[in-house]
Length: 112
Length: 229
Image (cartoon, rainbow over all chains, first blue to last red; front, side, top):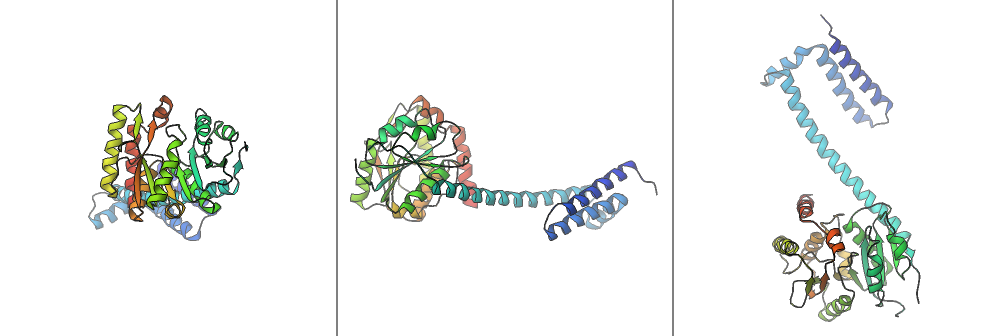
């Protein structure tokens, strides 16, 4: 089996990603999902034909296409999740800024 | 001057140092309780306003006009002194002399909300451009269609709420879509509403600060995505 330079690069990148996940303080289930993705990535890099074989099983032409479709679907879910998270943060920030404003009123000069 | 007024005027202001003095000069002739909500201005809005007998609430960061209005409303409601809550734009378009008439109509007619209208008989829109007028009338037509309210001017910042009606209004739209949001809540909550003629004076300043037609499309988008939430 011939190992290409690109494979070494990709595997190193994924290994770095795994390292990063374990150093960052993230939730256990999130870590598991990231780890599964990275592990799948490493397997697919080592055996490039595997993706194509799975693709054929599912009726998709090439492994690259299958990965592309998966990428689109995952991105869509991720974007939706991020959007609702941003909305939630905005609501929290509004409530916070409002509460500070209301509890710290500034009285102007009284001309009476 | 009255000691305590039951009419609370909420002015959301964002970087209005050029006109805030003129607006407060006009308002402070009347015995209203004035609350300026400085929506994270980076200019001297708060400093200039502090020379007047008003209360200033400061947003630590800019949230948008809808959010500023809601902050002022919450403050007025919590005070337990406000009986009528008025929303008033900071850009000098409105006339303080219209407020008392609106409150009187609200009191006598036993309404929950009185909305100012520049297009109803007796109302005025001074120096309005044809483009602006057309856009506003289009917006009015659209808002009537969406909310089912029978109104002649749906994007007027001068409104009077009774305190109990204001308690039930919850603005989720921080940005400029709050005008339409207020209307849909008036409709959903089945509040008793009426319009009163008011005068809107357009200056170069207010035209520049006001809504561009392009931004109208953004507002429409806010409303639609807000509805689907």
